Image (cartoon, rainbow, N blue to C red; front, side, top):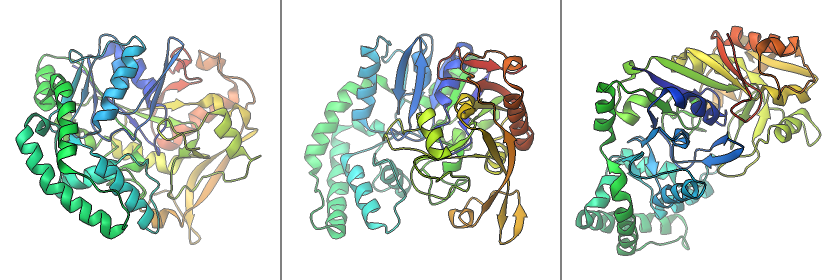
Length: 430
């Protein structure tokens, strides 16, 4: 039995989808355990590009069965939109290979309105995707207003719940903004009961399902959404997501004890990106002709979900060493190395300076990270197209030295180097 986790070690968008796709051949089930339709996973397979945000990317492999576990928050519209999109692309999706937890929480239209009002009135917006993810998780932990997927199958109970929840939401919205959108509980119930009929074949107790397949000796691949620096407990709070996006979320988000894991792959870009607000010590905010913009254009650094341009900067070894430690990572996969071919000279952040004092400890809290100035180590670039390279020995010496230095600074071996989006543009490090 093999239980593997693929987890991002930066602020998300590390190209985890490609690594999940590579690992599917040796696994039977793939599990999303956190987040919702705010995630963005892009996979290039057989020349086709697939963009997913809610469904696990591992579902693109014919033999795989996919699980959306209890730690995920689900918008039914996005759920069926993605199923339809994949079916139209010739990918067989149905209740035979996709399972939805009855304990996952549901996103309603009022969650999206709540998020909009929260961002507008916060004074210092987080920079969310506007998909209602945060307010749904707030209702989940607040207990009185959270609604689970399984409740869709109980029409009378669902209507009673919404008739209690919606009027309270309307009062709050109107107090925050006099012309805020107002919602009708019965209309929402009728809309979601239509979803219920379509979702019913997919809904099951996924915790019981996963423990059954574990007992059968099946191999499970856990697919994290976002990145570890966005983890609600261990990331750059408050500029984080609303779930545990590191490996810490597996047990609570799926019901599978973490001790079942026997391989954890930490995915990192060869540089660093971030979407939305929050501190970013190594950011290259150097104008339209600068290195940051060059990296953005070459790496197509725009959000899969929002289309927003990603902020780009040098590799931060302090941050990645912290998240690798936090996640119990066994090995690193280094992605988008080919993008750095456009840079003459590279920098790696090896420490921070705070009030004249040097540290290699990552602070976590946003207000503390804002005070950190990066201490850089400079390395030569290679200015060579890497997209056709398939062996480590064929990489330029400067590229091999860069990979080795990242491994040394993080304290973990690099097992895979990616030099392009396609599956074949992958180098296995012996």
